Length: 279
Image 1 (tube, rainbow, N blue to C red):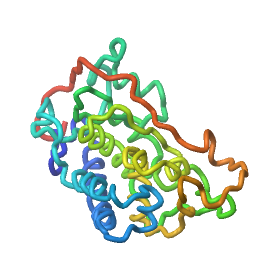
Image 2: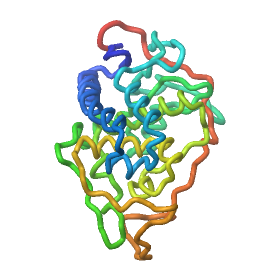
Image 3: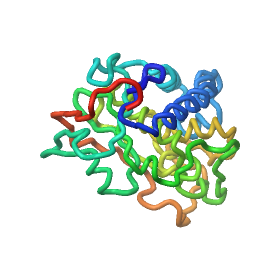
Image 4: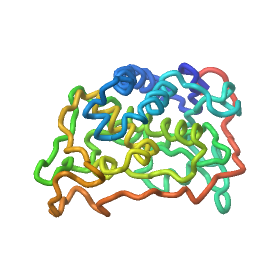
């Protein structure tokens, strides 16, 4: 086990230094985001992804908690201070739990090759964030380049693409996972919004936006990239430009709906050998 700030990194072996570097880069990237969220005048990026300035204190505090690793859960194995814990799974029976029967994190990771990481929904919340083998073996770039932004198709008032070109980096994936922990642990809500597509994130209402992890990632990535191009904000619950043109990059219903977490994990067992230094 290795500590970076208050976070624990467990069982990542030769990938430990990569995870530590992601945390260091994420810390630096979030400082201007915290400053932007605390600004008295909402920025275009904030308006695009969070709408209502009254949510700014909550959003700013969440980003500050991420940079400092504030513990929101009790101390537990490999999390002596209760802070979020990054646990790499490299073999079966290292992280098992129950959801309608026994589950194994490593097996779940291999079942879907596109799954790079996930945050199991325990009740009460727990601090464990799982990194799958594909987080390290995939060709996903670790750190986004500067000035990496989305563009807008103005005649349909939408971002081009689904947003992956902005958010599809290991640093932002790590942010999404940690945001899962802080949203779940700070609110205790199991009725949250689960929306990935950037255009659906943009069209969420203010409250839904504040509870959707990907809105935090898109907002942070927009500030990081110094992005200036956003769709025209909604007005009175309606898009200002209402042209019913099919956008091939935007599949699914026009308005994203809340997704209820209908499963809660129980009976956690961690089978990683307790060692000192880098596992």
